[in-house]
Amino acid sequence: MTATMSLDLPGEDDPRRQELRSWFSENPEPSPTQLRDRGLVVPHWPKPWGLDAEPELQLIIEDEMKRAGAKKPINPIGTGHCGPVLVVHGTEEQKQRYLPPMLTGEEMWCQLFSEADAGSDLANLRTRAVRDGDEYIINGQKIWTSLAEVAKFGILIARTDPNVSKHTGISYFIIDMETPGIEVRPIVNMSGGGLFNEVFFDEVHIPVASLVGEEHNGWAMAKQTLANERVSLSQGGLQWGHGPTARDLVEAVRERGGVKGPLLQRLMDAYIVGEILRYHRLALVSAQLNKKPGPDASLRKALADPHGKVVFNLALDIEGASGMLSDGPSEDWALWNSGFLFSPALTVGGGTSEVLRNIIGERLLGLPHDIDVELGKTWAEAQKRD
Ligand SMILES: Cc1cc2nc3c(=O)[nH]c(=O)nc-3n(C[C@H](O)[C@H](O)[C@H](O)COP(=O)(O)OP(=O)(O)OC[C@H]3O[C@@H](n4cnc5c(N)ncnc54)[C@H](O)[C@@H]3O)c2cc1C
Image (cartoon, rainbow, N blue to C red; front, side):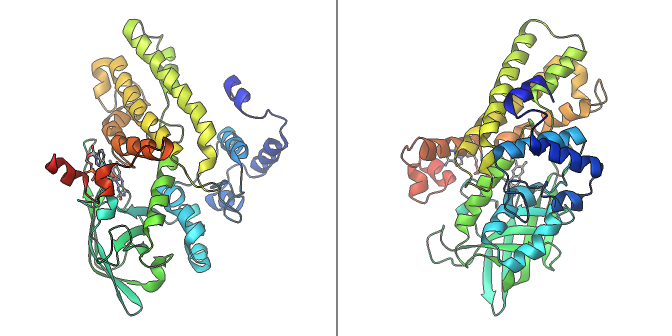
């Protein structure tokens, strides 16, 4: 633990730390199942999935896991976005079926929300789900679906009633990605990787038991999923909570003997903003499930995404021409290079910078709603009119 962390968190003799340390010494390389059963994968969730952990305990757990070298199973959309919604709104049967393998990362999840004309204005979505006996039949197309190529399940929002206002006729489904009629086509991004996909639904039959909550009432859950997403994307790292931090760049520069002049000034600016965001995160960490995630997560994302862009750009400027090579100057360089190539996406996915500012204006500051959204117009329609 660093000296700075000890200012933030209870010290070595804290009984919660001691208990965790003895568990980790008995289970030095815990499997995903052991971590799940101990409540350490999602400690902020209620029991039996998590520990109902308050913010301080969550941070202690994070700290002790790092110390023990233990890594949580990776299932960002499952545990970060839709899992908390299932905990609150899923039936007991849905929880028992889907949550255990979600928490161990055995079954990956994706989020089938965005469409070509429904991104920021998500309620404009056109994918249809029509009830037919004990099934729904899905037709439509989603886009930018991260992890669809590996996901076993997806959270899908689709229109079940086209004859009511656009926010009211939407339902929230769990969909098995191996169901016949689903086609996943990768979209290649500029780093050469296929981070997201187009997903097509052609007469896809799913059981009625796939519905989460009430029919036509999915919008509130979709909003909750997006709010969870904003909290989840706001962890410590520069790349939507993952990857390196401004402190890591300072360390890398220190190891190389430092930088001078304008680069030093830029590095210190990045460090200062990184520290402010770190403290803000400590205040936010409780928001994910126990309390409803609030607009604070939008504020943090609005600050953290441009910060990510600044730091990745700075890393390349510090490195000079060789920084443009993916295998660049050192072993861990790939991290900075791929982060740089991903960084334009930071201020788009999970709510664009502009949309986050609207949320902050309306929900944190109580300013009037965006008039065009109130009138049910899409942003594109508003642009045309102007
Ligand atoms: C890396 C990445 C991963 C993603 N993963 C997923 C995923 O897994 N699942 C999923 O469903 N989606 C995913 N998305 C899609 C993402 O949610 C959308 O890109 C985002 O919501 C913006 O929608 P859009 O791209 O349609 O842009 P648009 O909504 O068309 O916006 C275009 C521009 O208009 C601006 N604008 C729009 N409305 C307003 C307004 N009211 N006020 C001011 N400005 C406005 C926007 O800020 C933007 O600059 C991902 C995106 C990225 C980049």
